Length: 64
Length: 128
Image (cartoon, rainbow over all chains, first blue to last red; front, side, top):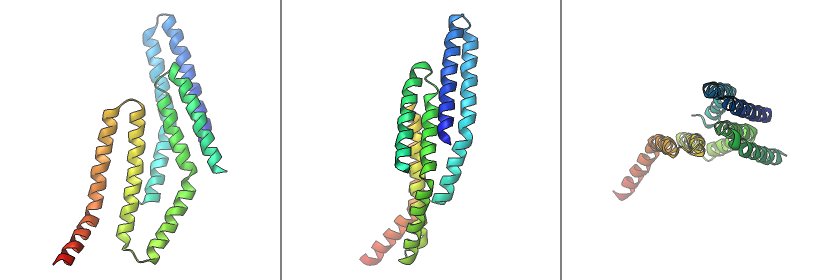
């Protein structure tokens, strides 16, 4: 189901936030930025297949 | 009860978004996207049932079939455009949302022109 994907992305966001603030505290801003980018890419790759599924469904239903 | 599922999914997603906005402002967009998709996938069966019954109704009262499919296409395009525009509006990009809506409006106008022309033709036929 989609609800566990939502929870996964929330967990990922919290994790990335914690790592980000930790790295910031240690003075490694560039690594913090990289962590955020990687987290975003992972989250996007989770969502992208669902978006394409939604569009396929819309195409079939509304005969676009 | 599907409606309870949908509402509780919305509430959970809202709580998570409010929570996550404080920590990392980039991630709430994905959650709202996912929630929209999840709710749509839940109502998929019912929606296709409604459209199928409208389809059979349109066949039985002999509306010209192209009109019905055009209206269906316009509804679908309006839904997709609204979906995308709301996502970018939520992320604060009013500009992109306006452009998406403009594109959707132009494409809908393009689809609607045959119906408009048929109407005009009919009016001219009545007048002359």
